[in-house]
Image (cartoon, rainbow, N blue to C red; front, side, top):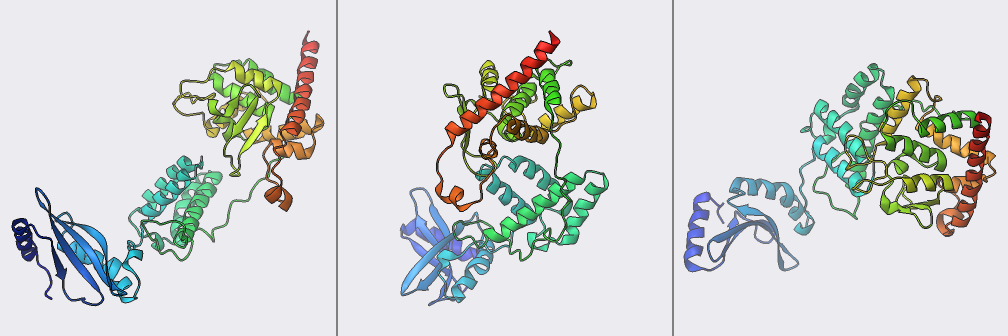
Length: 412
């Protein structure tokens, strides 16, 4: 059978419009195996023309839609058939398993990875998207992802490192490495389907060394704890009130910064004085009874119209970010009105002082949602430990109240 032409297609469409009978046009030879066909169907006001990949398999005719004519011209339909379906037919596989065989670009890879993070409710997806967009502009979003080499990644990282922002360079390296690791695995994940195959065989960031991690050890003693707490209660400079309240809740609960910063009305049980997160950093749900001081503070806060306890000063539709809280604390440290402390130091401070208050390490770990790696905890123990956590928080609350009363009595 001869190859199709645009003239032949137009003539066939006119004939179908007149006869009102469906017609199939085949492009070239392919009987017994498979080929590109155009199916013309009479409709009330027009003739619908659809490109199909057709295959004879186990004595049956199988079709898979490619596109519609004339939106997809003959030349494009041929290219797609050759690219995505011809090889599948020659291998004896069903065309139903055929996918877009074009290797994805760097932009495709980064977009798909960010979408993966967002779909899995990873709070980091916005920061990752911003960083990867910058990388995409430098390397070229239209380059094939498989063509990016280690030298390309180094060309992105070296200028960042040279500016003195070493932590940022390490973060960007980590984002690129994670995106490529996801791409390599996603192509072999039978549980999901992807509109793009990247055909990446190696990770260009895998061999790039990481910035040495500095393990923090700083924590506040009782004197510095109270100095910071009192300043947050009555700051000596105009600050956005939700920021000071968020840091006080961090000090009183020992939770991760992101989880307190994003506290929403749906997560607060005022009757039981419990904060309940459906998902946390380690991927597991987490709930804590808060100490009486924290419960009183939370109850004094009126969430904004979007339900956030600690809304952003710039955009009230969103909660304050952990980066903004870090910057806020940094500015006060530079003014020397509070002790030198970071947000993570506050989590370490709670762990240490709560131990001094008499809370066992196991309960402190459970309150702070640290993962337990033993088989019993991971696979069998489903007890919530809420009574034990509540008793621990009561001890901690008594410790802080005693600390506050001592200072107040000295001041009097």
